Length: 101
Image (cartoon, rainbow, N blue to C red; front, side, top):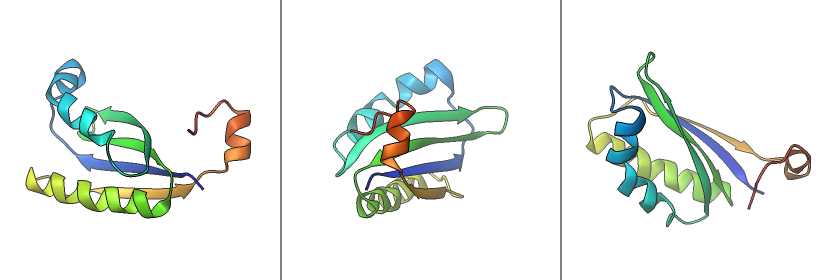
């Protein structure tokens, strides 16, 4: 069963196009993570929050990614990472045009 993960953390920038340029290599590297299907990058500049919504093939792969990503962020001095894991109801999600594979 596919697993959706929302990861949020405090960040002071960069934002928008500058963020796109700065994190392009990181974005490309995420594609190689085990069980990774897709990611939507999210940012809330007024609240100084960033993160992503990810889809993984299993909870195990999702949890492994979040552990690794939390450690990577800590290396940049970013703490306060939160993650919410949710199993995806694929039958209903497909009715509403979700791309799950």
